[in-house]
Length: 356
Image 1: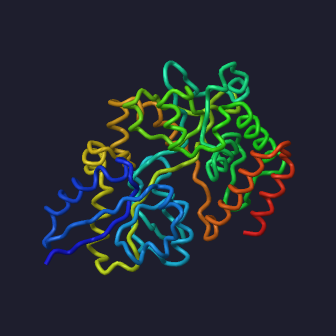
Image 2: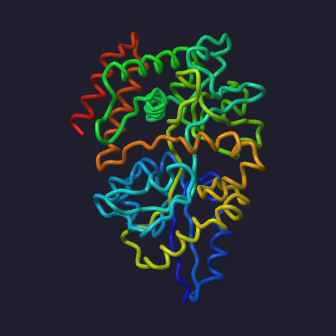
Image 3: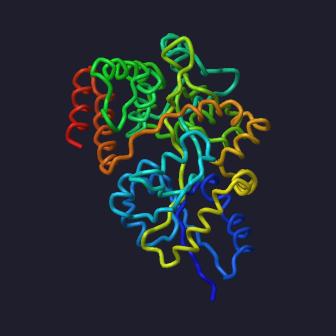
């Protein structure tokens, strides 16, 4: 009898492209007949669904590391055991919580800049960028949580990151970075406030804008003439602190085939699969071997490798998701208001932290 595992991934080629080939390769090493049926849904839909519900219907789940604190506290995923530190940047660390790893790094990304033509934002100071006479031809995702993501990167690259121990930085630093965010929102394409990451990349691909200062990097867009690189900075030299993104593969705590699902997930994250099957079929690998090979072959990995290594890992405490939603909603309302009072929104964000 064939064992069928069910998995959930997102509906871009980067999320589903490698799975058939990975499954076929894994089947060859198994003493039992097995297969994996992967469902695809829009990324926004997956992100809005409760992991507690998803584990009832799936054995394997593509997850954000931001959900790991919640998953660990409620034992929604199975711990995967030891995980070697062979993944780019803080990818492995991002799935660690309460003394356990809860997912395998499968896909790696972070905030990067993206541009068409000869525009290069890497290392450009925010002050200079905002004075650029063509700044209105730039744009970035500022809808919902994306505006909060931009704030997190601004704070981290300023040297005043938001962390799990102390929360937001000193009030004056929070206000300063909110002011930078306010200026960015007022200068770039006005539609940015309605864009998520997909919308912003489409606007760049179609020529509506010519550059994006901060967006999670997606190597597949290089086929459309988009060049990715490091990010703008507050200082004369580039600082680490680009917000870490990417995806992991976790195993449902409700699966009836835990050993098989664990073996499959581990296989999908190994060096050979990540370097060849993952990349060759549209994926964006997380394994350091893959990045080390690809950075000598492709511009995306060459130009963004250093940014990935210095990426910033946001907190992942149990109530982080609701905290992030509260902050995101408040920032969105603030950016759409006139006038935008940075002190008021700063106190509101600090209040969310204190009430978490």
